[in-house]
Image (tube, rainbow, N blue to C red; front, side, top):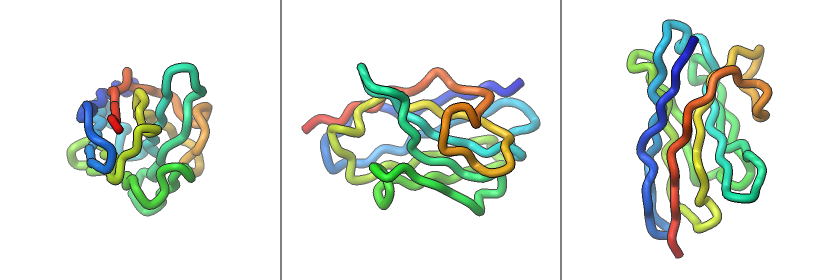
Length: 124
């Protein structure tokens, strides 16, 4: 069992930055690919970014590429999402997730455990 707790969300003006954190419990964190997804009201869950267990492979959604950076610290059982140049359309509930597929997945079924989410609101 892995428990995931997101933090770092909040209200920020357009153009600003935030760093989200996802703290994981469980000894299997270091072997898991970790992903970030987001969901805005009335919209489907959207892939944001994922990182392999070693940190050597990362993928990003097209809408955040070049603005967001995913990273991890296996010694701290934590994955991060550095978000820059934020836009109002980035407003959503952001979730982290853990999965053990052969490669980091860009879709929700590739993840077994999910956090409760942290709200990010970007004002114009």
